[in-house]
Image 1 (cartoon, one colour):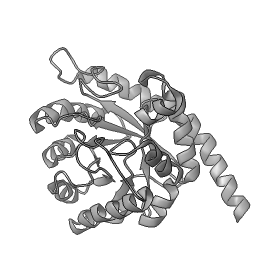
Image 2 (cartoon, helix red, strand yellow):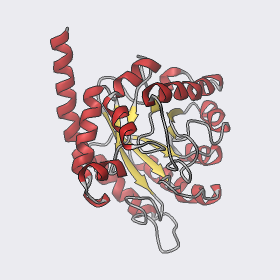
Image 3 (cartoon, helix red, strand yellow):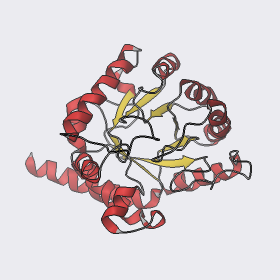
Length: 286
């Protein structure tokens, strides 16, 4: 496994979700004003709560990627994210990442102080994003997604989800490496909820360590409050934090290096227990 500057192996990294969007599936509208512009003060306060709870990274997003979401103009996405990133980078020591598929948005966020780009499309939406990250010396989280958020849940199908996701992430990683991003600044995300069926999401979470081992890179998973959890529990989106913590714990036990969540407090506790159990299992095997 490559030594990572994004997700150090000696800890499980908890990434806090900070959406400055009016329409994200779980928290849309919470951090925007009545003109759908980012409320920077509210965003800083929300980030402070997550950092106080133990988050080691804050992931700022300005475009919803929920199933069915439409693309927004990059200028609007920049307006929603760059001022927030700048305010966070000036106040907090934790890493700030920008959740975007677009090179121009990534570039603006990096100039504002972001150190990591989180691309759910795996460079399939805007290949220039890799060049932006490479030129700036930024790290890149390569996600897995077939299609776009608008189309991704229209009859998704896999014959072997683990093998196919690993193979397709490998293609994205090849593009990132060709742009000049070294492995120590790369990580992967199998795209939980992004063009996946219930059984696909479960398989990817339960085999998170296999994904990392196959690709030689750290793995981030993001099951937070997603629809597949509601399918299992019957809970509406606002009541899925306990199920999220359970999914995070299983993924960590299986080998995930980081989790991306809305409820940092619950994830921190889940990570502490799961990592201890994972280490105990390794010691027993050894």
